[in-house]
Length: 252
Ligand SMILES: [Zn+2]
Image 1: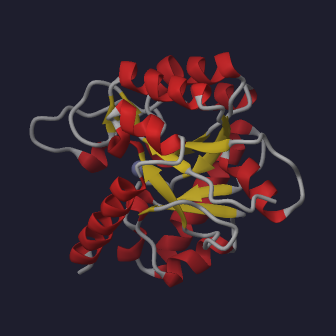
Image 2: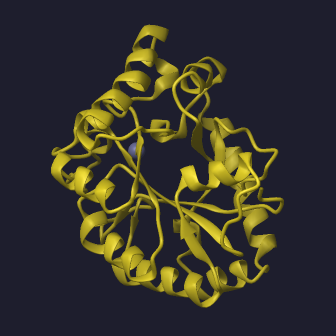
Image 3: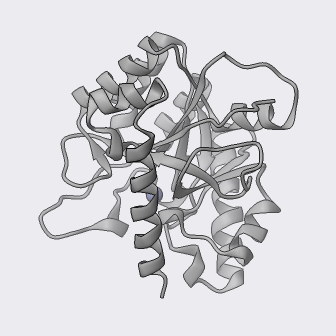
């Protein structure tokens, strides 16, 4: 049982692309190195869930690592970093986009990013990486009729389980967009789910919408080290407020 707040980090692509869903590979490696120097140990979301629900002991300073969208660069850059330290992570796979690109997020001036193959997903699962579901077509679930939500939530799990041969227990809603009806569906098919609300997870957190920390906010490495050592809380709170304000403005 974890009685202190715990951080669930959110990454997407580890590459030199533009925007907050790309973290430069060198910067990423330094963020990992600072975590290690501060005594942290990377775990998966399902490992956190087990600890929240039981008396099972975990490393003294666990930190949950999550990567959305299963970009090709996870295998090339992230996995070697994790493997070298004996750390784990959760990779959220948009099941219908495997082997394709992030065509849901095309913007002028940015090229599509490649998503890994099923073979790569299955191999990472064999290596111990937790594979979580991220919908089939990477749609905003709050915009869909209930039967389509059911399809996205259930079929994504089925497709992944078929390919990796083991249960899928974690879910991340595309764009972090859920409402109570969507969360109700998710709760029927998964053990735990994360959103994109900025915050620290606590035993009292909503298990179908656990908050995460977008690592783009910690591209400043001295600030990242300070945060891990218990500082930078004023910066974190300001970011929380701004993110909350932005999400409220985006709600139709
Ligand atoms: Zn996504």
